[in-house]
Image 1 (cartoon, rainbow, N blue to C red):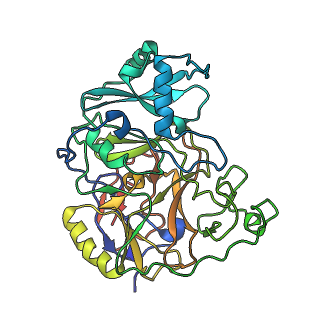
Image 2 (image 1 turned 180 degrees about the horizontal axis):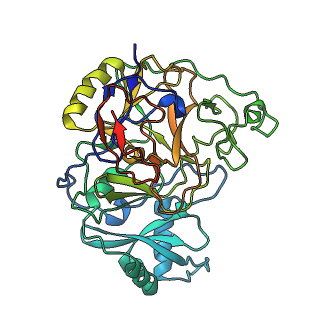
Image 3 (image 1 turned 180 degrees about the vertical axis):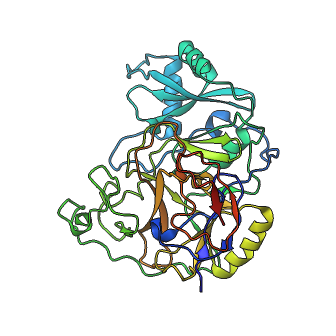
Length: 413
């Protein structure tokens, strides 16, 4: 019986689910079924309690033992210092290095600020009225075309989630500013028909924390900088909550969360895409693909609906299956998901997927995790190959708009 096809359109903004044989290319031939076909609509959110609290970017997991302010607290501190650079207690002044982005939230101007001496994942949104850096703001506007689209509805969708990297949204293409019937989540949701794994991973035997000579670290999934160094065909087993090590354990890269500063942006023909606002080195953890985990029967039902709608976000959980088998479960990010939902296809991708196990060892239910497969430049779009190594026989096709030098011109689904 042929394995389920997992392809989508190559950045066209439309895709359809289907079935067909697939090869064993990268990550077992796994491809992505599709991506966003967004429709413009008015925001359903009503009122504005507090602009500055509503639009604070959220942070990932903090390092244990570090006395670090939360992003919202840090932003309030920074805004206070901008108004009064030298505080009464003589604290160090925070200096604006660069204005990264600008958005207008319900008539209020906000700027995404890169601070001197702080990494990009510490960037903060600051209201214009609290800023005293006119030269930096003028420089930003000389380099950028003003975005006239009010992106507040998108921020209401993506920024209420916790434990996420800072996010910004840019649309200079059309008037789309929201996503209908979508909820931003950070972890997969299990549907009622999917059994939640009960078998926990055996804890490591490290005493007082994992060190370089510990068996779990000697497996060398990651290098000293937390970058993956095993092939994407090999599953990764991280330390679990049963282990005694802390969050800084070298075997907890995915659990510490992403440090990437993402920007969702709008493209002609392709709809929404995602780029990194700083350079990303090869092997760096990008983000996990999350959504609803559904069984085979539900995948078949939703696949019919997706084909009618002209797009799909289904992704098979297939790490334990051969090329001619059908996966028991899939992830659907149509109604629930995170920023990975907006990743576009490229025939020359800069990311690939690894299967990662943390809480359990059920081979049918890995966590699907994106890592960089080459160095990624600042503002370069984050992409994956929807059809790695897959057979095209008997499948529908759609034009590819990835624009890479080795573009295959078509994407199959």
